[in-house]
Image (cartoon, rainbow, N blue to C red; front, top):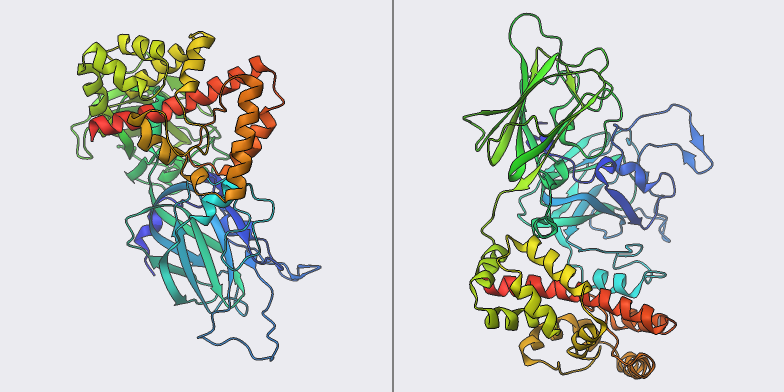
Amino acid sequence: MTLPFAELPDLASEEVGGAAIACNDEFFAEKENLLKVAPAVWKDHVYTDRGKWMDGWETRRYRPVDGVAPGADSNIHDWCVVRLGMPGRIRGIIVDTAWFRGNYPDSCAIEAAEIPDALDLSMIDGTAPPFGGASPDARAKLGNASWEEIIPRSPLQGDTKNGFAIESPKRFTHVRLRIYPDGGVARLRVHGEVIPRWSRLRALGGAVDLAALEHGAVVEACSDMFFGSRNNLVKPGPSRSMADGWETRRRRGPGHDWARIKLAAAGTVERLELDTSHFKGNAPARAEVAGATSAEGPWRLLLATPMQPHTRHVFDAELRRIGPVTHLLLSVFPCGGVARLRAWGELAPDATAAAVGVAKLNAMGPEEATAALRRCNGSARWASEVARGRPFEDEAALLRIAERTWFALEPDDHLEAFAAHPKIGEARPHDAATAAWSTAEQRAAAETASSVADALAAANARYAEQFGFIFIVCATGRSAEAMLADLQTRMANGRADEMRTAAEEQAKITRLRLHKLLAELGG
């Protein structure tokens, strides 16, 4: 069976950070096997103290009280949750039952969810026991997770790569495999398109690897990949062996080999790496890299260089200044192997809401800009000094200047900013201009049980009496229980140490509010 989506990256593979994080049973074979890179293998006459050794995830047999095996209409099932190594849009899934011939599941179903920054996923199935040792914050995030069925219950064949195409346009971070009623699955392949959080990458500033698979780059085509897949060129991490790179067959006569890379985003390449690690007797003699703003060209030469075997070549000053590009064309002469290609560069300017917001902030008068910035931080001196730092080149520049200014202020300026906040759990923000932001930030605390709210209020009072200022913590996405635990821990600090801790929390709050300000201005 032809599976076109199988050419896309495997978002769940262990080599890109995927992990099987929870299951209800793995009696015969561990869930971690699902995401191994290599195909499943069979070992004759190899047994463990649990039974036949199998290269996959295998659960115990269901043993009904009445002795009757579950039928096709039974909802009895086992499950396993996988965290994708690279979040993205899922285009197809392969449920591979290799070597499971009399012990494969009758059918399966798969759900997916986007769970941002989940810390502990030890128990996330609705039928599982309580969360056990999971943190309060993790429980809150997991309890709000919305699972969407992307593969309805479907029959499986044994010792087969069972493929399912998927049409969902959504970005997912986790998948949950349900098998009915029990049995074994050798490998789970989740193929799709990587969707990074570009807002985060842009906000951080600095160089970005535009050719990184984890950022969404893909090797669209190549002349030949007889010995090694073209997709290896942009994989995360160093090459592990000669098999973990792009390698063509030996060319006879004229011509050369090539691979075309679609970059994760448009940008100007500032540093280029061509890595021939492990290719000791089969590296190319030389290479060229060209760039273009489309897959069809025209191509502008970025670099031409001789190549050495088993070497990580790094180029910066040698690169031509060809401007922003969206594609790279790697040509190797006459043939051979390249382990990795990295293209570090500056992202091209974007027209997102944040960029529009920066432009509008730059265009404001001094008083208007200071007032807008003071919504993000209650220190008058901080707001005026940051406003004097305009014009900001981009969002990353604003965030750098804002944080550098904050930590250069005096303690009295910090105390002024602290005093502008409502207490954690307080119903009414001090400043009407930030009321919506404060309400959203403290939503979890506001919805907590009255007993926890009372304990938090009492602890806030003790804290203020001890230190002389209110408890400052970045409340976004945090439960009241977690913040209460933090408060109680921080009561053991000395005042100077606690002032610094509060200032660091204020810096986090300021950064989040600057994002919100730019989004409002650019909306």
